[in-house]
Image (tube, rainbow, N blue to C red; front, side):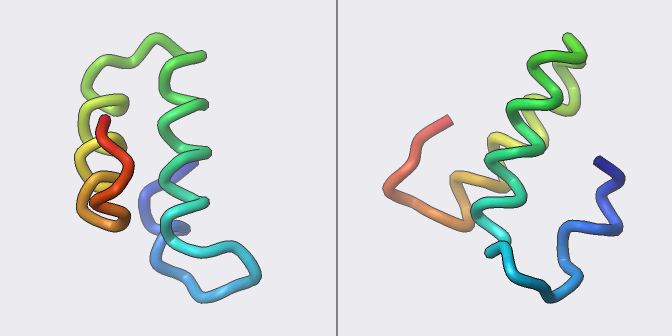
Length: 50
């Protein structure tokens, strides 16, 4: 998922988009992407810890 698509308004929340991006990044075995999206997810939703 290109990063540019995450801030675009739509039906899904930013938190949901970041959670999906973490899942895809894990599937793609991209540690850099996993860390970036997990960190952003933690900032979007402090209750969820990466």
